[in-house]
Length: 204
Length: 204
Image 1 (cartoon, each protein chain N blue to C red):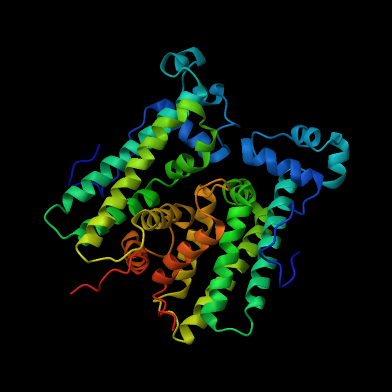
Image 2: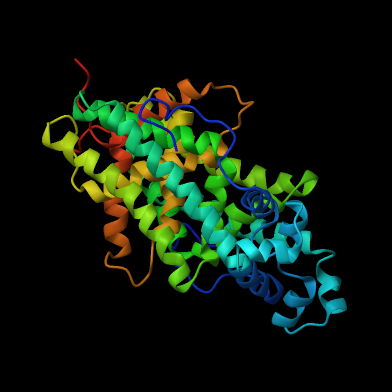
């Protein structure tokens, strides 16, 4: 998990070999089309060896999605903490930058965590929803604080937080690491859209 | 296809029984996990009967996705045409309303057209991309016209169009027909976010 200074730094994903194999298979062909046998083969394990760690394919998905969201949540908290001594809009900007970078760098993970979570049902869905809500709450809270300081002006912080999150998540659908824009420029442009959406006061 | 007055009206989807069955299966379990045999059984056809109309599962997906986008494009043009005598921002608002309603009413179709099109490769992907780009172009053009009339103020109409489209598409991920907000209220709130994002001048 990244410390408060390195939320912008991404190494290889911190996933065990089962989850690494599952991420690749779920992203390429989907959860339902992937068998436990496929995952075991890609992870270079026997099927009983895999079952020793995960008792079902559904549990592999739960473990993968919660690992992804734990990483996003830790980075989000670190981004906010890195702006601790700054004004609320600067902290909000850091959080938005963190969400944008995550959805650029971890595209496959973001895709699986949104498209394949339709396959999570019943109690298996709960940890995913709880973590997702925590990220959303951080964003809503940051918007409320920037609103209280008069730096943004929104009718409904919850609606606004959902709109901002939608923009950040959406980047994963079109960003290409070999595309024409550097991540910094994408962050700059998306922040301009976010500031408009939130009626942010111009910077002094 | 809807005429210029009825882009807000939705009947049952205008899909043949093969595409209706495929939509349901692709939305619930995904393209890769669905076999031609599954689609034929759900459509109450023999496998050779299905192959008489569609030569592969990939072609079923192409036909489904292009039907969805043709519907969206026809409704989008009708929405713009219904505001023909109005100012550019009103026309833009009608187009955004049309995109929002489509993604609320046709959630499953929207989901398949975004999540499952990763499975479209090579030349089969082209009609889908061309139609998607046409919808995006309508939005970009409407933003440019509202910019030219001084009703909105954006740095880059293309970026802005992508941001607006992302918000509209995102509604499909959280809208529930039994949720607390009526579609009209959702349209009103999302339009407020869009107006912020585009720095729209306040209405007189």
